[in-house]
Length: 260
Ligand SMILES: C[S@@+](CC[C@H](N)C(=O)[O-])C[C@H]1O[C@@H](n2cnc3c(N)ncnc32)[C@H](O)[C@@H]1O
Image (cartoon, rainbow, N blue to C red; front, side, top):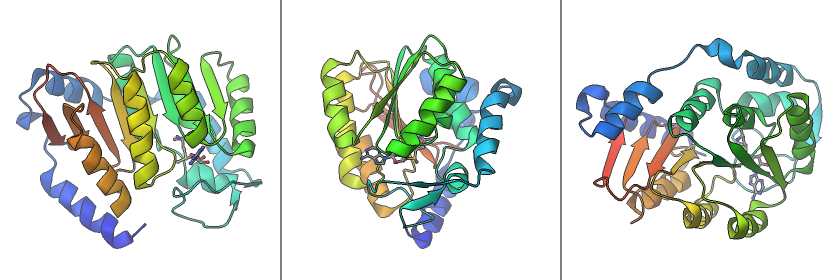
């Protein structure tokens, strides 16, 4: 990760980002005004945020397997839970946006690559008629996330433990169509592209894939550019932290950088 890269990519985003006044395509306008900019009352998510707070104040450490990029803060394999909860988990406004997208698109089957403590998974699964398959390689994080899901009484979360490089291809062979995917695991070029190529096998014209940290590094920038140029992607939205792609062939290929 290069701080210089992040600063320059943020300046570029800030100079290019537009709001609803520049949106003419009806689907994009509706998505932006009703979902992206229209945040709900955050009290809906109070119980999830209380859990995040608990982890932020935890004094426990865990041992993590090294699956590649993803830690902007520490490079050794012992991590404090508080450090993961503070730096390694999707922040509330983005997790809440993912939940709103799930509701707007009437998602029934969702995938999350990278569970960590399960905070964002809870957001995705709070649309209770959606089945959420979440993938995590760290056995200790899986243990924590399982306790979280059981404690919250979640029956619509399916945690798949193991290296995503192995578990995702197996899952894709037997999975139903994927309405929503949140890709937030190994933030490197090749794994990101491999996961994208696997997931699109189960995409349909109303699917949405959301990539985290699209400007985090030059590798992720390259992966994002590759993805938005892919022939199957007809609409891409850059919210800086998150990149959203859609596959509806009835949409003219478009790319927007949007204020969020
Ligand atoms: C950024 S965290 C996920 C955060 C979570 N989505 C959230 O917002 O609450 C990324 C996670 O992906 C896991 N991970 C990275 N590469 C992986 C791989 N190849 N297989 C399995 N898990 C992996 C890491 O162990 C880490 O817990």
